[in-house]
Image (tube, rainbow, N blue to C red; front, side, top):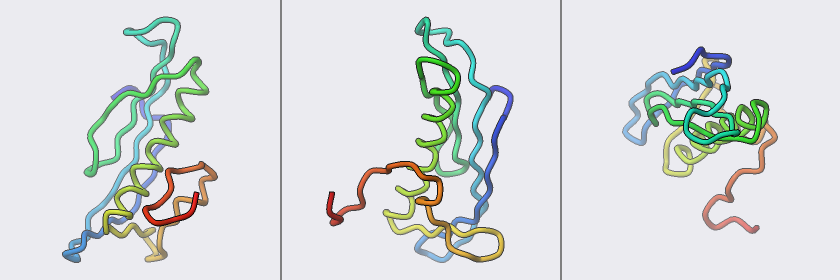
Length: 109
């Protein structure tokens, strides 16, 4: 991963009750080596999803899209039955980040 510019830590819990650390890592945006003139930003949500790359028209858009995608992955984990908490035990709420996320199954659009 490129130099990490943002990191976020939570505690995950599977339906079996097993607790484990969850780390979100965002890399420093850089000019894309694959598609020019785009920019790329790496994102990882350990151990749920391995590193992958998000592309944007500029460094700011690439970073914003990577952050949104990371939050969407956390939300997806919860929709699939997982639980995410802060270190103090309070439940994680993806909505506090202000991104418009994909709707949960059964919710009104």
